[in-house]
Length: 429
Image 1: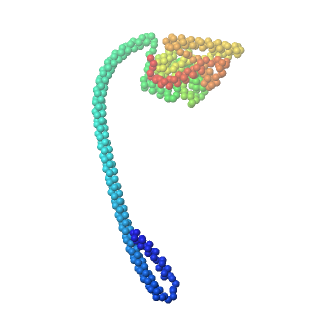
Image 2 (image 1 turned 180 degrees about the vertical axis):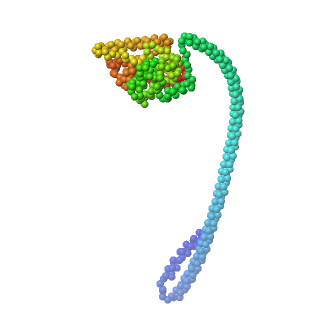
């Protein structure tokens, strides 16, 4: 390749003098020497042209040879590239084969490990199942032994209880005979069906407080209920009142204010029904109420005692109330206002003291626990319900006795009993 380049350079250097030679202006007729010189020059020119042609031919040959060499070099490079590509393909295939082989080995290893773990887990579960079965059979055996022992114990207990019940029955029979001889009446327990029937008859409704007001005929039950409901006697919707007993059936009287969840019940007086005093509590279904109010006079009746005794057994709050406690007030014009107020205060104090003593004496005579008696006036109760109470320590305030205490205690105890879930069918011993 270097010789070709050198020839091309020499040829390029010889061309300019030739061009200058042929470009000279015409000269005068040459001489013999000039002709000889011209021939010599012509010959040299021809020789140079021949040499240039030879150089050109050599250059063409060298150029063609260079082109051929370049083509062969390109073909060799292409072959080399193909060989490299093939080698890369083979390398990649070998790498892919290696990766595939490693992956297959890893998968095979993982599968082997998984299968080994499964076999171990199955073996463990099988062992645990065998252990559980053994334990279950042991427990069954222990349970059968325990049941056998329990059955034996229960049989012995049943025999003992039967003997005790027989003894209790004999003692109860003897005690009942003694009570009948002494005039003590038995307690009648309601059945589940009687309990539901009593609730149905009075319209018992969950979420409401049910208060029963009981007492002998003419004790003022209806008037007190009217006052507790914020109503006057004779007002539309009020309980019927009269000189004689007007209630022959239980009267259900909801509070006229729908925001007050209270229902009052006017219970017929015992003297108006053909019911034994000791059955009165049971027949009237008093065991379903949230609280009982017993209106009393100076002397307790058998009905009063039966209600108080049964209410205690059934854990129902029961309140002894002496109503109509305004009979000591006077409008006698013989005295001036101040003297009349003094006389009323003295009469009220005497009435309150005498009433409390009478109630305590009646409770002791009936062998009942001592408890408070609430002395109330229906008119004062109505004022308290309507919120028209006088200012504390005023003259009018002194005329109130137990009206406010009665309201607070009834509502508080009924709410406490409702919250404790006391069951009417489970009397206390």
